[in-house]
Image (cartoon, rainbow, N blue to C red):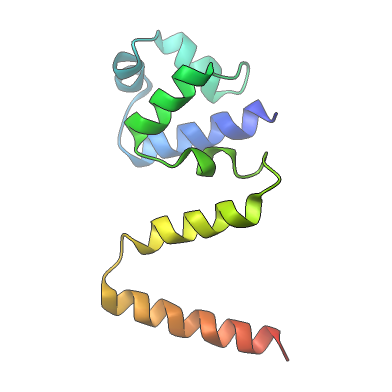
Length: 108
């Protein structure tokens, strides 16, 4: 398993959510050093810690694991679905139009 990649992704999401390492550590009931070790990929989190991280950061666990699982196409679909759920209906239609053009272009 690629601990560095998973750790990097956890750090990226944590920062995007506006949490410091200290705040995440407090929510996880872990030391800041332990969170740092996970984010640097030195050690992988235990399963229960991994689940708590995903829940606290409100991120799909599939996203954190997308490059280490073989079923990545399904994971990418899930990620796309998650991103689309955050935009308006008007924006969804525009995105769909762009995707349709990209698919038509790639089929030529």
